[in-house]
Picture 1 (cartoon, rainbow, N blue to C red):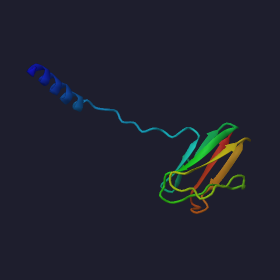
Picture 2 (cartoon, rainbow, N blue to C red):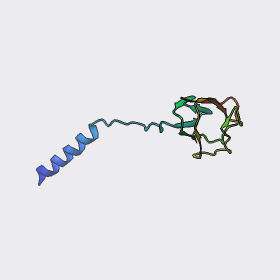
Picture 3 (cartoon, helix red, strand yellow):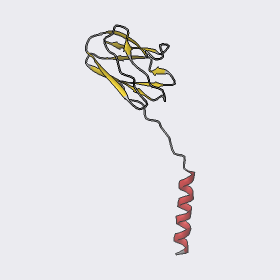
Length: 109
């Protein structure tokens, strides 16, 4: 019995010494994250027919407005999202109307 207890303790001690790889999950390929008052990635290339989703990870609300007026979100609060499907090839620039220094683009090819 004592040998079993010692073996169990040794196994537990060893388990605590083994390094564990920690990885962070990458956002989905067609997602733009809004964090630290930036769009990340600032430029995203997709194929026609792709739906792009903007997700707000900031504590402040943000918007997404295309420079051509093609799409416009409501105020996106923390953990909320906005999606748009890009059907035609082109370069689509967008900004946050609340924080106009925030800019990005979606390239459809």
